[in-house]
Length: 225
Image (cartoon, rainbow, N blue to C red):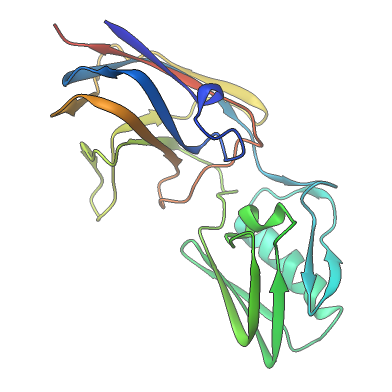
């Protein structure tokens, strides 16, 4: 038996196609499921008219529209934009955490603004403080692999502390699609019980959620007999 995991069929269509839940009317039987095929967009996150703005101290602030090919380029443009309002702003990125600081208290409000997901913040308002952190800034660096977590099953580990269910090598150019059909290296996930709900997350090698610009993707798993 084969199953298709399609982000277009996610339970909540308002969430990202790279971090979602998939509800099944009939349970998937427990057992081993082998990855057979993946079809995924390789799209670098961009700042456009739909995700360029947020509120700083109650006033609208907007980043320049364009492609940002690295986290550092996004950090610089965010810091420059904030410093055009107040020169005391600084922006740092360590790992997947983006931090905005100032010598005076400031507020951020992402409640109605999609840029929150790009910068790693939640879509809410943030109370006055000297420092605000967004944990989970999207990956903009060139990727060597895309990693998929299914129900937090960690069957593949790197030489550090990160682990994934499946690892997909990236052989694609910007704004094209990755197609992966394993032949030599078979990747398998084991469900120890029947599954009604799958939780899916697509990450880079630093465990940051990959941004596909809302474009859907799918993969096929085959159950071992």
